[in-house]
Figure 1 (cartoon, one colour):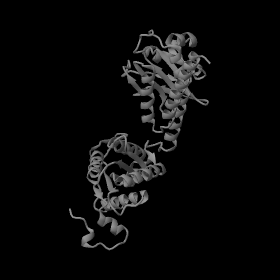
Figure 2: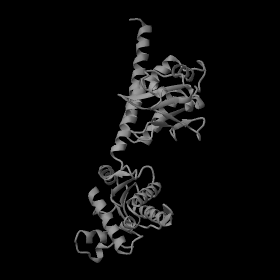
Figure 3: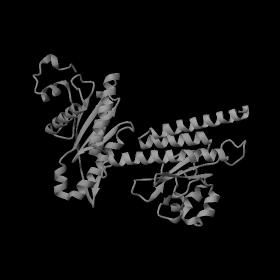
Length: 365
């Protein structure tokens, strides 16, 4: 075997290893937002593109593909991105494609500028369909090359690389979307209770082992039954959606809010101690109290009660207990007049366990 052949095989092996690592990194991510960030950053880096963007569905049953904020780099029309209709002939053609296309190639093949006008307005250098098994999960588009020393257009090697990675990108997006759908309450768009417990269990173990703070909030909309009885269940649903939105907007991306049941929401605050958790809880309480809720011309004034528990308490041993203590603190908030925040202190925890409370058990304030 000649030296040139060995050198060529070595290059090919290294390229395959690189593609394997890229694919492994992408498919190992389950959180949609993080996954999109990794995909876009990887694509712009590997192809040395001026930008990369993803046309994705808002949900698995939506026929519409849009970009939203799914772009990185010097992306044109960032404030005016259109949508692609998955039911159109042009998009159905792309769904069955096994390659990537330039804008000119795509316009020649689909014969309908109207159906791909959002793409024409952006004018990307490459359009790559993303297909997982039989499902079309979206489209990846990239801008012009930043490095033009080898020419202004992407080489065949670059196109082969992105087409090779595309199925892994598509499968990762499909799995993330599927997980998101099966763990999300469809009405409030918050996580479901069972998923919340699974994540809290994992994070609590990490927090305890690394001595990192973690807190939980249990919330309940005050007099929610009265809303349903007075204005009807449709109004109740509106209230749940709006309050859930306020709760989610009041926490960080790394935290988690879930619908616990009925009008109760539960929140996990990652790496958050008691004092900070109380500030977050008070922020949520105040935002709900000050919000203007208008349903069919009727203005509603709502309040929310909150209980807070922290894993810094030595009596907290499990995820279930932590939520229970936050729930006990919520009960105190409700019994004390509602529209307030209560912390699950050591005294309160001992009482909830039916244990005697002595002066030395109560921490100094």
